[in-house]
Image (cartoon, rainbow, N blue to C red; front, side, top):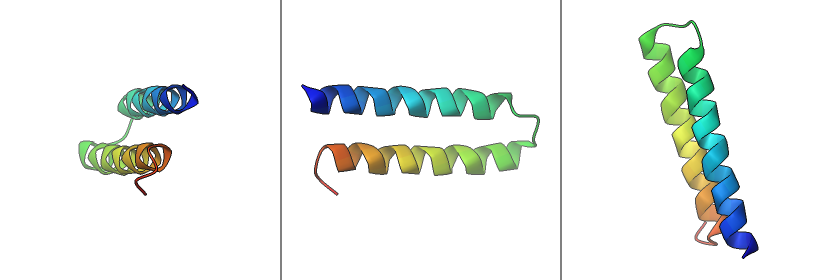
Length: 53
């Protein structure tokens, strides 16, 4: 059960960070790079919780 909760919290944090990045007053190319980095970090942390990585 704690695995599911941890994965859900990680998913919600990634969604929140992506929303906040979208609100930043920076150009589109920088936003896209930051979004990709956030998604990669989120996927890696989800894989860590699932004991794949």
